[in-house]
Length: 137
Image (cartoon, rainbow, N blue to C red; front, side):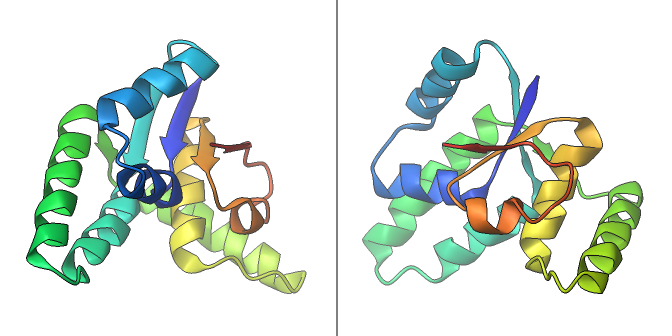
């Protein structure tokens, strides 16, 4: 089993002052030894939060957290093949009147592509992606 972490989990961990190492230990305790990755799209979301920080202290804290995260968790690039899957899912969903927010679609497709589950605190959006195994963290 593998697990793609959504930014909602990582943002919550940073806000709760949970060390990256502790987050990964907690995941291992809950799911056993498993490959944990993040999507390059998640990097955009997390870096966006860094650049929206309201103080230098917050910038420093977020930068440190992200540096630790990127050192510990591999980042999977969003590929052409993933984009093709995302396009198909988006078109099929929209035909049914379902719109998945684009960043969440891309992150979810990363998990689908690798056959991994998706760990999130945002069940509402990810449950809209057919075939995606979503785990609330």
